[in-house]
Length: 302
Ligand SMILES: NC(=O)c1ccc[n+]([C@@H]2O[C@H](COP(=O)([O-])OP(=O)(O)OC[C@H]3O[C@@H](n4cnc5c(N)ncnc54)[C@H](OP(=O)(O)O)[C@@H]3O)[C@@H](O)[C@H]2O)c1
Image 1 (cartoon, rainbow, N blue to C red):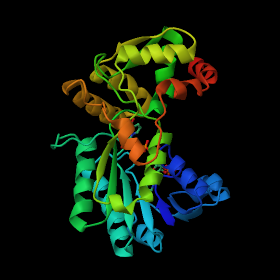
Image 2: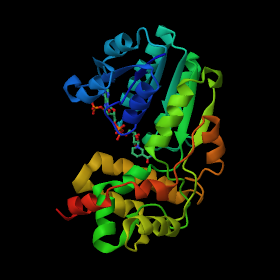
Image 3: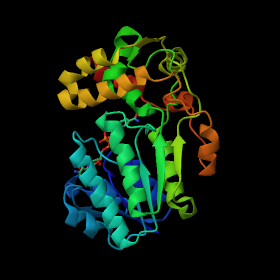
Image 4: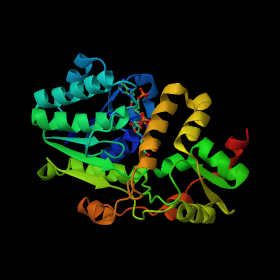
């Protein structure tokens, strides 16, 4: 099978491209800058230059593929997000692909929220249905474990012994690794019989803040406590690091979580759903045990 993979230089798309290549599929990746895709090319991917804002490049990249993996990169206005997604979906429709696997990269509320980041994901799902494109939607409800390894989050653990994060302490979160999500995406690409379905996916154990801190303490080798940070304060702290727009999106997203029931980011039957795709989910202890926290600590102290 020949699969077009978007975002293959990013955190979420890279493991999908790698796993497809390992499964002996043909992989075409659309990248904005092919000079940054040397490792993908060396691994056997066909690298094509394009941009989600360039409809012609998307149609050209989709020609001749059997299936497509897509997730939306961060965007800051509705028109941009919708036009990116329409380019992908229209091109896949015209090319007659047998399946599009769409990773929403987060929860998709049942009702419109007025928050761009969430509502866009719903609008894209609707558009797939509207055009009749065979689609499997994967909605990761929990948060990616990988964010816990990012410098800022880790700095607070290493320097202050606190895991400062914007989910209320009592909220249960189904932390999931991008590798497990990628494994499900690759399995989904091989399941055209599931077209028309949407799956809420997550890690194996929904954890409260204290439970998360306890598991990470074991991997880090020193005790940490969970310190919930109000979404507004968390976003303020991020502004100087990631800029106003990204901090605004993070603040809005976590404000919705604060206002939602404590199980908003929890998936109760995650293992059964992953099992449908033949994937055994990685517990956070196992993931954390394989991270290099020592060099992260060195980065954090610089
Ligand atoms: N649930 C969670 O825990 C979690 C965590 C992090 C992010 N997210 C969500 O995941 C989504 C994507 O985040 P991210 O951007 O950080 O993901 P990412 O997978 O790390 O990277 C985005 C990818 O999209 C590509 N890209 C960006 N703009 C493009 C364009 N105009 N045309 C073609 N390719 C383009 C980038 O390629 P280049 O190499 O060209 O830059 C990169 O490969 C967001 O909705 C975000 O909120 C969720």
